[in-house]
Amino acid sequence: MSQPIPLASPTPSQRLAGPRAPSWSLREVWVRWASILGLTTFFVLVQTDLHGAGRGQVWGMLFLRIATSWNGNALLFFYLRRRLPGYENTMRRVLLAMGLSVAFTVLTNLPLTWLTRSTLEPGLAYWPAYWKSLLGCLRFVVLATSLYESVYFFYEWRHTALQAAGFERESAVARFEALKQQVDPHFLFNSLNTLAGLVGDNEPAQEFLGSLASVYRYVLLSKDHATVPLSQEMAFVDDYLNLTAIRFGAAVQVAIHLAPDALRRHVPPLVVQLLIENALKHNAISEKSPLLLTIHAAGDVLSVRNSLHHKTVLAQPTRQGLQNIVARYQFITDRPVLIAPDNGAFEVRLPLLPAA
Image (tube, rainbow, N blue to C red):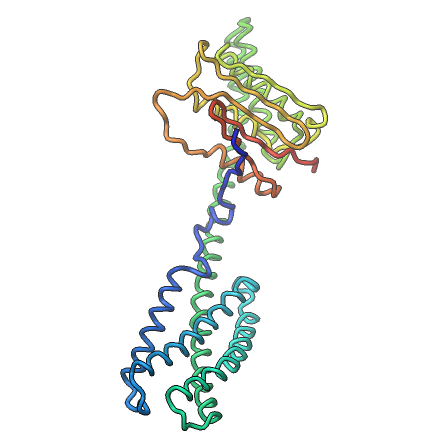
């Protein structure tokens, strides 16, 4: 068996706001280097006094100065973005960027001025050339800081706006679902009671309706809880498996092994049922080739394992059930949901959580 792998899932904020632009993107690198080459070439072409040096020499020295200044300051900007992310830290980030960029420019301009003077203008006094060069570099620092911060601020503002819109949509959906649930439970239970009266003394039908009512009651009662005891979840699973047994008979075989201490731990409600439902949905089931389900809990891990019987006509897998489970776990723990791949079985391992 291969090593278990965590099932990746986007975080809630990513699902709501969509993908965010990375702080160090390939696009920025391409634009930066293209701009360095373009600016170097432009300044060499418009320069009339080359002090006796060849244009190749001048281009190389100017390229070195611009590339050093731009790349060094870009590294400082991206470092500060990681340390002080978000638009709420804009003022601190800008002030630190300005201070560090000025210090970087003052220091790097010392060897660069010496190198320029030695290569292109040996007779030029060092310090006048240094101060003149430093003034030009500082102008560039102010312009670059403004440009980088403006772009970053725009992306942060856009992310926040999309996130707020996503939360507003989620809130509207939640309110709509709450309104529906005020009507649906009474309607369904009244319908079940009416149906129970119609079937009369038909014992299998009465058992089916009893299990169905218990399943729906658990769904309603657990929806407001982030986690429930595993013992409570498994009582619900027993009712769900009763419905499954009436539908599939001996075509589905279930083995349950639960350690007593594991029953006191918690899981998000309905997670075991979702995994069983996935197994029923994605496998061919018959009495000649029964689906084997094993539910095992010990320590702080709950394992749900099913045999694999591939369907002749394969439906496009959406993994919505698994993604739903992962997303719910992400709200309450850092421990991952694991999938243990196997040639003949499919196993999902869920963290068992301490009581809230």
